[in-house]
Image (cartoon, rainbow, N blue to C red):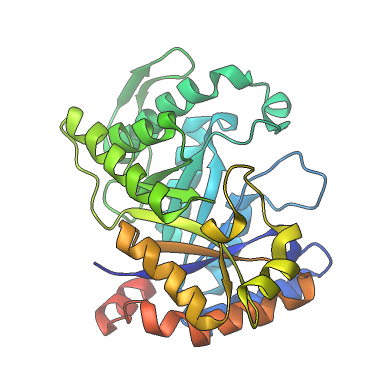
Length: 319
């Protein structure tokens, strides 16, 4: 199975810099053989945020090899027919380099209020949206009747470049997220999870998939991991801790990759042993160190773990 390692673009990458600096960074990532770039989705936030679909369209026009995706797109705040059209268009134009992880959004998010969606409906809305979008990407004259969404004899063209549409993965580690990943989605990307939680999550997803006669491919399990280089784990933790979301019941060092290169490689190997093959690495720490952190990851960690790109794969990405 191919190991692929991408970078999660947090808000600090552009909060205090213009688009030129961001573009320079994106082009550097492509030169460093970063597999993919990932963007998050927030409408209402106490900081500057970019719309993920517009941003991915911009990236598609500037890079030729890297893939790009969402981690995660808050699906219940989007109208699924319009979203399916946007993503199909984007996948068509970028020749199949689109990756898609959807989620339900945070409990403290005001995006639902802004979108006119009741927060308690978000799970059922997401389930309906996944089914409807997949039908729109693969079928002619789609008719669908749900509690929240409906369609009558709709056909979307052009189709996405990827057969069946862009692989639609689910984020989250709740029981409902694991059920959704197994019964409806194509894969799973969890964040701030320990290797043991990744292993048990994969096992649960396989059970849910088998219960409805489905199979999630073995290489469709991934994890988003905050990371920061330092001389020691404690030094890295001391610098980066304020930028990492904490979990009261779990130590930060259990779900982050911190310290010297060999320690970060060791942490990723633990996740690989648990069954993960796709990684979204999110640099933490001071904004002025982020580019250096990503470059170190690209040069000191990724070459020893990521499956090398073959010539055929490179040509496929170029379209």
